[in-house]
Amino acid sequence: MPEFLLLVLVPVAAWGGWWFARNTLRRGEKKRNRLFSNQYFQGLNYLLNEQPDKAIQIFLEMAEVNEDTVETHLALGSLFRRRGEVDRAIRLHQNIISKHSLNETQRMQALLELGEDYMRAGLFDRAEKLFSELTERESLAPSALRHLLDIYQQEKDWENALDIASKLEQATDDHMGVFMSHFCCELAESSLAQGKPEAARKFLRRGRRHDPENVRAYFISAGIAVHREQYGEAMGIHEEIARLDPDYLPYLLEDYFDSAEKCGRQEHARDKLEGWVKSGHGTSVVLKKAEFLEQDEGVEAAARFIVSELRERPSVRGLDRLMALKQAGGPGIESGEEVLHNITRELLASQSSYRCSNCGFSGHNHHWQCPSCKQWSTTRVIRSVLGE
Image (tube, rainbow, N blue to C red; front, side, top):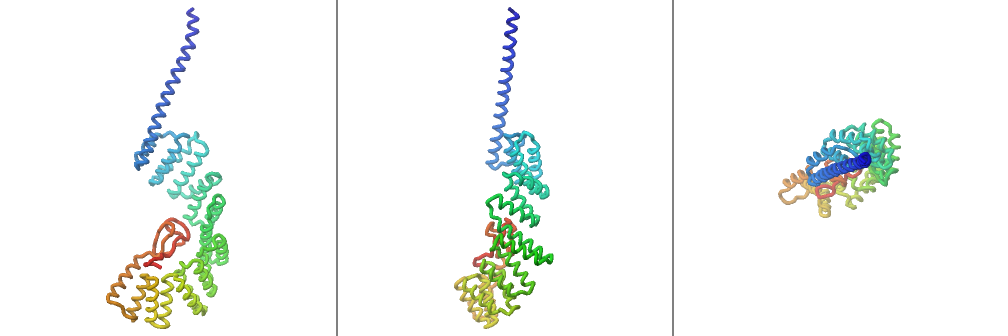
């Protein structure tokens, strides 16, 4: 009988031990999960309440990286990068990549983040290598290509930028024609600086294929024509620019009339100027006509012309020129003109001449690529009372 009881009690005891251990483990796991969940939501709450330092401390305490927590660690790395703590972001993303428990998608996402860290740190060679590898991954290719394009633009590596822009256009629905056209213009200008006009013309033709209305390519072509003393051709190119985008008239007027004088086509140029004035293409064309009137008919004729234009399209630049003409002997106006003249000069000196239509960056100089947002062909002449 005791032997029988022993045989019965041994399995019961073993089962009881297993049941007790299992429930103990479950309670421990539930406790850990509850603690993790509380920490996770506490960290998120700090982020939502714009308390990133407290959020970082919470997430660092949740140090274990696995498939369930990797998104939190990636977000934390991005937060470090935005705060300028690039070294910490790099170490965190490298730690994520070293974990063998992650799936391939999560590892690739961490590599993409690490590449952005390298870019922010100025380690372009490392970033370029990473992004080049990630372009082989179809899901990450667009992001990797965009980062590579940014790197090559910053490094002024226009050949590679042109190649990457083409691949990006094929991989996405993005139209990269404007970008590629400007890259060709950069290569054309580089060729001209090296004394290779034929290579420059090839790049310009290629640039026009990417963007037929990129006026920068026409400006470079006009410069080549002037260099070859083909002034009539240069005038035709300038007229085409004015047709494509009259906003660039202030930028070309002097070169246009200089070419006209050198090839004996002043009358033709003045006829064109008359048309631009009648079309209301800004103050610069008005002032240019006034300059010719002053040469041909005297100060009073130029002043009366400006007065008539100012009635239709008032501008500070026009008023400033009118007052200068009156001081030089034109018809008199009411007292205080000298004070007004000084005020207009100060206004013009403080007024930006160009503004980016994409980000609003403004300045006194024209830029083909906006220094702020890096977009191409977005810097335009300002049309206002104090501008064109």
